[in-house]
Image (cartoon, rainbow, N blue to C red; front, side, top):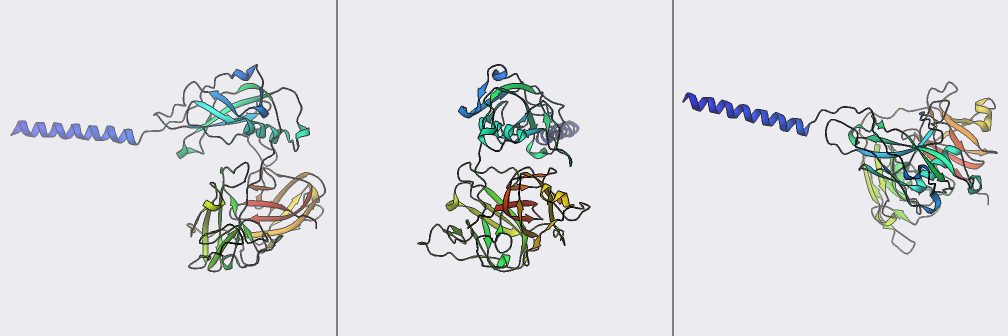
Length: 387
């Protein structure tokens, strides 16, 4: 009997040891790597023509050491001078990132994405700004785990020679909300922010280079029970309700029903085309967003507030949407703020639409309807077209 007890205890101990080993395998201890090695590129001395190329290829010696075999995301970053400074309130970042994400040590990046990053760093606004000569750029790789995206590590940088090119991209195809849920069925061109509410760009989402379709979101208060989406202000087709209406010959779909007034989060994914959009409306989770009593726009156009400010108008039904009209007589920079002290503000890296960053928004000369969503921190400059 004693032998049986000893054997039973031994087996139990082995089972516990195996269970612990299994638990360590499924819940590994993650360690943060200091960096990893990026090989030299074949384009170090042989320039690549970005306009005629589809991809650029890079290889790392081995994946960063996280203490276990992990699926690592790799993203190519570009600098003009091998300086890798993040953005501050006073200066822009000295590097740009290419949208493509790879998960193997053989990394691909869109040549046009690299060209776009160069153009943004250089401030090129048209094809004639681009010199017809070889230029040196610097590449490094950002690596991160999906579960720890805010804790990346970086490779060494390498020099690459390129023939740059100008990349003119299609803007994201913004969809707009109408209906009692947002206070009005008025679908008038030029009423962005006042009557029709634009969906928000989604962070890190990609938008089709030809159609502009992609992933959009929105967080805000719904004050009524009916909601639809339209693609073009002033037109009722294409539109989405409970089904898709591509043209005037198709019956008008019923509106999406909103059960009770309150804060909601909306997802609108048209990645596979307008007709195949996936729409989800669900109650907002979390504390109610902070409410503001003022937002204003300042910038080079009004000497950063010294010559007065553009005070935005608050939407009467959707309290977190602000709008106004502005004219920029020249290219420059601008910033949304709540007051002269800058208690809260919203800048950005892109124009005419963008999400908040610490940089000032690079605006272009023209007349615009300005819209700011102070929950999602998305801004829009819709061009006002003269009749």
